[in-house]
Image (cartoon, rainbow, N blue to C red; front, side, top):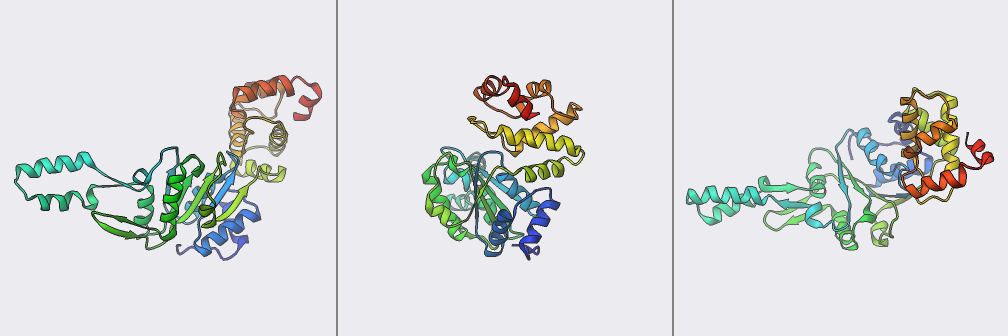
Length: 299
């Protein structure tokens, strides 16, 4: 993929930690194999557990560009691959009509690369001439099954054919990271192309390390208190349990407020950093925080 090569799983863990991403051995193994075998990674897990961050960190480690395709309902081939710049083409046609240029000559120019709008998938293929990029296909579960089938075709050989120009093939395969929040099942055919990994909510030890790594100025006892709170709040049956991103947002908010410990008052003031649905906030206030014994366990 680049001059930078992972020689061992331990090296992956170490380099990720240096880039302030705390990974367990299972994820590091997946990244090691993906890099060495040049296979896409398929990461599933709850929102906020660090799936997207994997691609961001890998682009930093390989000192290469991160190309992101954010998926959504209705995403199609042209939006993800390429489009012709129609306004620019029309302008050129009008100018050339005034000069009385031949139609064939004009068509040859307007269907050339300079009139092409490169979308993420084409960008990842063309950028490979310099250095293989990291291609992040984020939240694939939000797209349609038709797009999945198209993506399967692109990932199989990393080449596309533009009728007016010809076939373009990647000289170096990009490292592909596909993420899913599992709002729907993704087709087996796509998963088979990839090395699969499910990212769990972190253990106490891992979450504590994430906080102290990402927020180096935070006190150890305060980090422990935040970690304990977050581990406990995930045991409640919420619509959306808070992920690591919420942990870091909350910890940063508390530091900004110059807090050194968690108390009842600050929890109520900053609950919106942790829970993102009104129903969950209401449930926490009425079913958890009203019980003295439960409240004491959180603090």
